[in-house]
Length: 61
Image 1 (tube, rainbow, N blue to C red):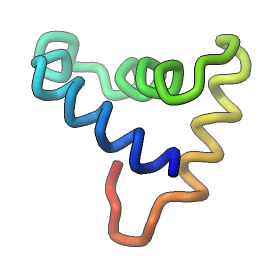
Image 2: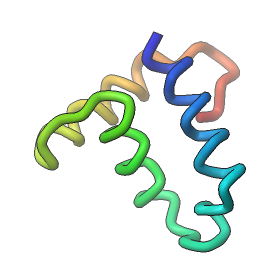
Image 3: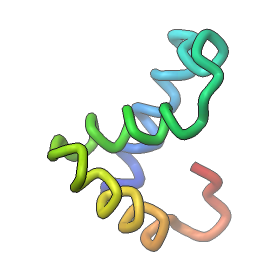
């Protein structure tokens, strides 16, 4: 389920134009991780690793 939320927020992030204005994929990942599952900065690494392991095949989030 988190991958679906991730995709929705990623589309919104890009629709607003943050991807072009900021141009930093790592920053985008951090922002989305904190939105999908608010946590401490240190816990964000765990969230990103869980996201990578649960992506449906063919999804390039």
